[in-house]
Image (cartoon, rainbow, N blue to C red; front, side):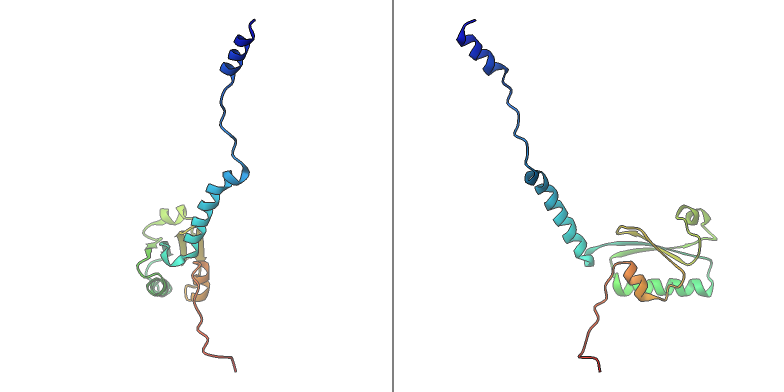
Length: 144
């Protein structure tokens, strides 16, 4: 064969493959996405909460739980929540679907992770901590 033909064959058979991305280039997009996610999570004042409160009838304990949870929502989640109160006597299937074993039970569906609060709904600090809501404590001066 002719040298010229061999060179032509080599140039034709040579495929152009895209350059492989470096580790930094691969993670650049995911790093930006992670930062955006972290910034969104860090600003909890913009998160929307989906809550479900399971009670039994209109007993005094159920009424207290409803009043306490509505009060928390009004004070700390004004305009950023959806609260659904479910009576398990009227909707037993809903209780089994959500794996409710005791009442009152408050379930936080959103934002993730899903969390359940069972029992006394008057423990405001524990519920707020479970909802990832931080209360700013104002310190007027040194403790005496």
